[in-house]
Length: 127
Image 1: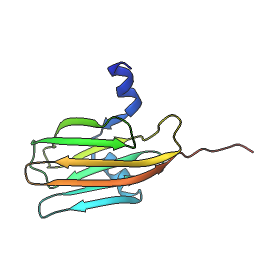
Image 2: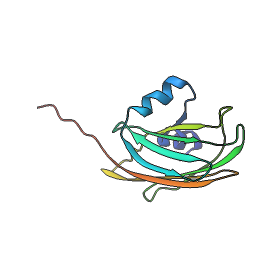
Image 3: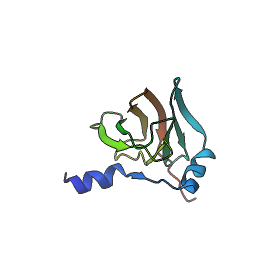
């Protein structure tokens, strides 16, 4: 599979606007982890997952790892925003899978956090 096809298949996107963050605030919380410095939350609309970290050092480089069942982990070097946050969306669809568990690990200068949450394929049928 080409890198472009792989990138399209994982559908991992970055949104940094305040409006995008507010969308995830209205979604049910799937998982939350916190320590003295940072917190990491995973919410879901039922189709998309929002992954948000707060309390990071502005502009710091982060190590981000996302897994979805037995697929190859997505490992990225990301940068915290100027406000000390990180915001990502993930669409967990996988061919021939009706559901699974998405896990995210975030390593930063002053924290190392992990969250995981379930997903299911929402199939709608027309009667």
